[in-house]
Length: 260
Image (cartoon, rainbow, N blue to C red; front, side):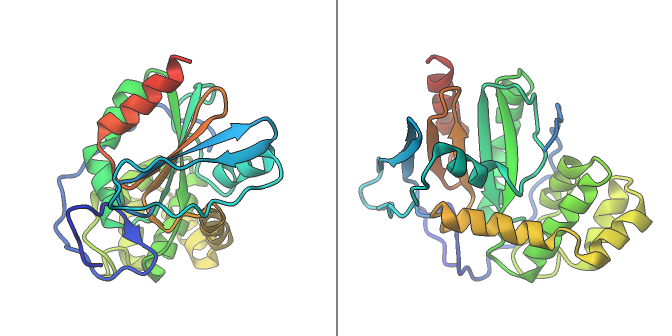
């Protein structure tokens, strides 16, 4: 995709991006059971049993398309966030849930991982205030789907988040082969997975249906690019964050939720 200084997401039909590899980062602490348009932030409030949508655009030059569906009940809406997902990262009883929809080949997902996620983990996940769920939105190419399947295969051995980190620590661009099947096996070796079990899971494409279902959840939520985030507060208010925003954006939303 062509980059601009205002865009911080990968859109649904991206082209190639730069292939510079950042310094590896590993910052995993607590483990538990398992947008696309510019810099706008949209706030979605769950009112009573129905989902009400309001849009706040902090950049008038980048309009957010209000295409989030309105399921019949809040419970139905919540399954779009929590089904077909990773295990939780953090304390399952944390009052705030952060959901990320991402693609392992995505430039801006990788940017979020290396520039923002570590601070969220240190200040909010490891302190028991936030738990994280990762959901696949595989929009870039076939390697995105295979890499997502590999991460879930790693979860069969209790290492989803380690493999998730390994993928982003080896990120080298989009559709250029770094996430090939051969390399995915090397990443499994790097985190000491049982290679025979991992290879069988990969050969079976065991989690491709789950990955596809997760991508469909993203589309049903009106997401058009990656990364996309939803913050669910203790009162079930849902805040939607578009793109690889800086840490301060997440910090401010977390603080507002914790002070309710």
